[in-house]
Image (cartoon, rainbow, N blue to C red; front, side, top):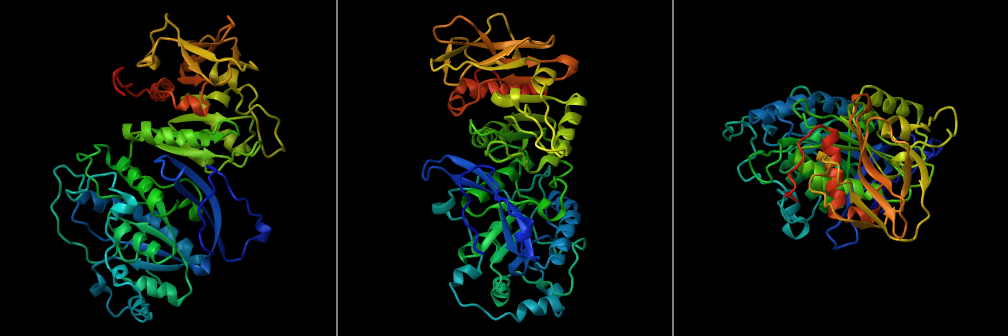
Length: 517
């Protein structure tokens, strides 16, 4: 089946009854970055699921060499190879055709059945340009978000160039029925077998994964349905080069670039379950966003906020999501909660699976930080739909520190302000004057002993004030909450700064100075 662009519902999922699945189908959870509206330079992250026929699917292993001229690259290939081999083994078991593509090493495999298999595929006529390296296409994708002009070695001092590779790393098994090539033969093989779907994994995302004749750019131009496995790639990027982020943040920027301009991504979880792979040296604080609400479009605003404000500051961001459909409790990727340094909650009256709620409670009970926006005050305030799901009616009191008592049914303007007597790091760079917002005002009462209100709000024409942002340090836990958070709030610089400060404070990370935009 041809891959169709995802509908513009962030984190919406096409739920397919298992009774209707093909015996040889693979369910893939794909993620794209969609410009919405077209030409606006505004990007929305979209996730959905699709079924691929395994017999019409190939998996390309791109340039997983035994050795690289850059020592860091060699080490990262070795680290990811075991997980990658497990993915390949499972894909092979499901009937996916495996094509090993360690470029410039074909002499090593000369005469092997896997090499002969590729060589015997009938050539498919077409533009000669598609049989060569597919370089940067500026009209389509602009420039890469990282500067790799120095070769991209992140070692200190950087290594020198060369071509020390001789074959694919031995950790990856090459089995009977697999093929080996480093050219457009990969496409010829796919055409010979009626294969229309391609999964790409390997190194390096900004170079070979994009450019090789068997990889993303060229296969997209040939009309294949292409996805890449985002937790099974690396980049050649030196963190001392622009945009001066760490190596792994640079990889995240390349992943986003490919999702915007070329094809969607998946993770190894689609084949192996568990959580996505990440490198041991990736010590960035990990924020996991739990999103499941149907009113305020945080399935769009929070990923955008994370890309613009957190990734560049060295924060790793992941998302545990349910569709915006009211009452949908099918949260995807919730095992990521086990890896969270901070949970950011934006859910409304959901009852997650018991296992997921157990992970949330374990995070809280371990004293780890939590941040919440808007409907987090009634995130899990619903009765379980069955004995497989669980709510948390008192999450507002027990974790956030105040009691949510519904909201004002106001149509009048709401004004918010910082509290003059409070000098708290979360208010760094937040204006002290009254600020108009369009979010309705929530009633949050009976603050706990660890609560420090930071901002208050009132409905225009009324004197009653309500806390709209606070921190809670009860039980030595860092918790930040704001009842603001609709789409218009995210357009206001003060709110984005407040949310950034609240997340960084919760992580016990440095907060930028007041004059930093």
